[in-house]
Amino acid sequence: SSKIIIAIDGFSSTGKSTVAKQLAQYLGYVYVDTGAMYRAIALYALQNGYVKKGEVDNELLIKDLKNIQITFQYNAALGFSEVYLNNVNVVSKIRGMEVSSYVSKVAAISQVRQKLVALQQQMGESKGIVMDGRDIGTVVFPNAELKLFMTASANTRAQRRFDELVAKGNTAVTFDEVYNNVVERDQIDTTRKDSPLIMANDAIEIDNSNLSREQQFDQILALVKTKL
Ligand code: C5P
Image (cartoon, rainbow, N blue to C red; front, side):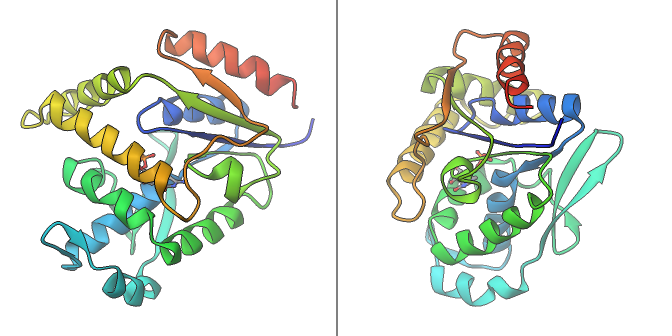
């Protein structure tokens, strides 16, 4: 059977990465977390003083984009790749609330999207890839063999995100902060001009509010098998 492209889109914290990783491991495919790429650029903007009074200085960031190198390196112990910003592993830095609160503003900048979409398309050239994000089925790989669109209630999503942060030892964060961030990102992501978050016509919607990880995986694997 030949290799395919699996595009997984959806709102924040819908479990896209969980199922994407499971699928990639099962199929021996490459997993690419495109949110991590946008998060790494948001981190760069913060580190370089391009965020002022709560707003991103788009012009300064755009001018500096050529100096930003985003790469992935496979971590054998984890079984998937991790994102690097100018050769530094930034995985632990990009999940916090600070990056989360600016990433959607950074991701609304067309020049940022152009840079990252080009990289993502290169990574999918030889197929055998599971990519998750917001515009994978609509913009990055409009011809992907399988497109999934994940949804769940905002409350379910915020609770999952909150539990994840607490499990990682983040005790300062409150549920309300996480909930508000999830809702705010949904709002920015669905209303931006360039590549807004929208379900592709030919995507299959999966509402996982009431599905366990295993149930979700089984359901999606059955869909994948129809495409192989
Ligand atoms: O997937 P994750 O929640 O880590 O993504 C963080 C943010 O990056 C999203 O809220 C969105 O603003 C942006 N993003 C995007 N396009 C993608 C992936 C992520 O605009 N393909």
